[in-house]
View (cartoon, rainbow, N blue to C red):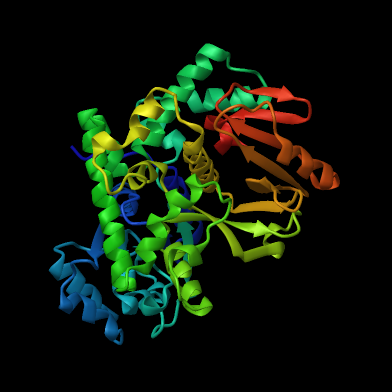
Length: 444
């Protein structure tokens, strides 16, 4: 049974509808299978008298060509009502352009459709900005954008029937009150389930229906194959897919940075940049860029040649890490369940931290600098908070030592607000440092 889950983005869309009243269209971007179409159609059913959903993955040529000539909008709307067997009502109906990147002229038409003012328009898409989807059209300025991520941890808990945990965690963090070891172990067990299943709605739905992780893994493999097919359509050489598939290996080796030239040889810098942009534009990855001068204006010191790359959904990463092996050989399932993840698999927690920070609205930055001739200090994530920055060090095992974080805070002490070591242990203070259980990272 396919479930329709409560998603936070619904309230953002509702706010757009109330505040804009038809003055702009809304573009909802996100990776394939994060639930864009489902939530937009649910929104249409609840908030409008009628709606038409045009899925450009399967729209007929007649529908696609309709947007080549907008001289007679009366005809356009009559045609749509006829072919979709739906009556449109002025200022009470919504037209949805689903996977709009498949029909660039439909996206360009938004300018004139919004100016006409009869109906509201929501577009969904992935790979929105890559060259082949934009080179011959004018991007409409009458287009607001929001990004949709996989289900965050709170949405996942809602799907599990739990609406109490995250508000409780928020209160505990605000008051800096520990949960207690027994409760922390229980909360970490719940979080590990999220790591295994992930936040892709199809995978969550399968888990709720079957309670079988083998079946969930099969769903995740289908989603990953869809991604690889999309990558191949953009780049027939398969290089984008190879970059994506190499993310777990790069993280597991602890190199600290993503080195695309180590994966793909003999590619010029311009071509490599195009491949990386296409990968990022597909919203299947989260990228942390190096901040050369960590300060409140992190984007001002962004070095895009130095990056760390994470899989956008940790559940997909668990499957991707053992892509060429079967479910029974994927030791991450057993290790996470047993809470016995070895040190060389701690990258799973770092990937989860990146995902949870991104889904709560943060851009990702890190900072590294030389400790000596052979070693570096590195702070995993930097967050901008007011006029200060918050450094974060992620640890999957012991959090007693946090040398890099301490060195960073000493070096940039006037710029530091709160500092965090994120790990699997209970909430507590360690001097000026907050020891933060990873299930709380989306709350800071």
